Amino acid sequence: MVHRGLYNKKGEDDMKKSAKRIFAGAMAAAMMLSLTACGGGSSTETTAAETTAAATTAAAGTETAAPAGDQEKVVKIAYTSDPGSLGTFDEGSSSGRWTVLAYTYENLIYMGGDGEYYGILAKNWAKNEAESTPTNVVWDIELYDYIKDTAGNNITADDVVFSFNECLENGKGNQHTALTGSLVSIEKTGDYTVKLVCNSEAAGEVENMLTQVMIVSEKAYKDSGDCMRTMPVATGPYKVESWVTGSSLTLVKNEDYWQKEDLRVECQEQNVDKIEYYFVTESSQIAIGLETGIYDVATSLNYSNASRFMEGGESAANFNVEEARDNYIQQMWVNRSTESPLNDLKIAQAVLYAIDQQGLINVVMEGHGEPVYCYGSDLNIGFQEKWKTEDYYNYNPEKAKELLKEAGVADGSLKLTILCDTDEVRVKTAQIIQAYLKEVGIDSEVTSFEQALWNTYQTDPTKFDLNISYNSAYGYITRIWNQLNSTRYAEHNMAMVRDDKLDNLLMTAAASQDDADIDAAKQYMVEEAYHYGLFHKDNYYITNKNKITGAKYSIRSNFLPGASTYVWN
Image (tube, rainbow, N blue to C red; front, side):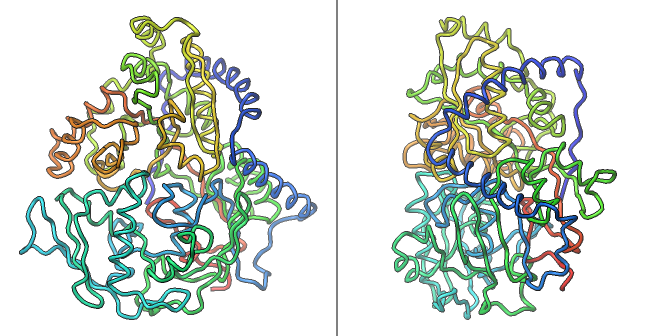
């Protein structure tokens, strides 16, 4: 499931000197950010911090966490990202949503931690070879005939057709549901069978769609009045009990869960009665919460705070720690539209040459992470080792200044907006990038928003020049490149442009999976400076051994509370 990240020591001494200089500038930027954080981002972060501080005060004097004696079978998880919305089809993507909603909504199939696909709502699914062509790919899907949601609605083929069409209808405006871009049609062929048709033979295309489109009852969805944004009615093994935006969310076991126990896979297991998520952006507060028994699980601590729970640390006796490279990459979208000065390719390229990947890792991750070499990762199928030795806008501030001069940009005359959510790593990344840009004569401001607003703004070319984001690094590399395929969007891709040449390169590579085709698409997107991969984090998965006897994680590296085992199991 995990790949250990190694600290790259190349140029370590020079990097340390650079990191110290950049870090000093970033601290000044951080002071300004606290004054300019926008919208719900500021209030969300304050609420979470206040909640944690209050809980910490209440727990003062607790020797260690001792949940083994708790009568209630509950697990408490510290997480950095609020879902932003509990809706299904029109809210964009966030790690907070994926973590929480995976237990409330269900998909047709599921990719397990072993990389294999398992049926969830789908009893059987297969490509119809007789009816398929390279541009008209047909899949036949059969549902279990006894699926019910938490309101008692029976889920049929009609609901699957509705869910896919609703996802397709709403998905053109955001990055998450653009996954339905290759869908031509889906039709009912029986009470519990459907036929799905796509216009692409792209590797993993249909499986990706089946694992990510959430299925709901059409009746329940329409009855909710708000697209289930505040209270899901779905088929999952857990259901929402309460949600305080920016603070906490509680799931409770669905006592009437539809699937038979002997047919359940890991994401359907119910080894705990209640799951409590607490949204806290600061690593130091999460660490205190672990030590005082407020939280049982944390997966987002930086090295300094995580080391307290490792062998030899002051709190090691009560915790298990697994260290692994994150399955997500930290990344940056470049707004190449006419709304941004980065529409000028030389300016966009100058920005990328101004950023030191290893310096980011040294400062933001305290040296615990790995650079990436493209839009994607060496974890992806289709990644090419030669990319690791190519010039991927390797740190070159002099080259950056030269390009700015060629573009006619005078020192201090250019000001950019750097967008991010409220995640601690991405806020720090934005601040360090701000300092790097200052070094080459580019002024910038960092604007940080809570998840729902960030998801909206990151598709609006008037709201940013650079967007600090993240993406999962599993499966085919051509799958994650879909976010640059503008045919999947109503107006533009995630670089805020339409590029017919890139679209054709991406679709060719996805269909052929030929090394030359994949490389051609990669080289073009790099040359055009649409996107910049930053780094993999080293993650520290910390669990309280007094309660959790066996922790399990998804292919996305998310903790699986229902599948993990506890002292009461």
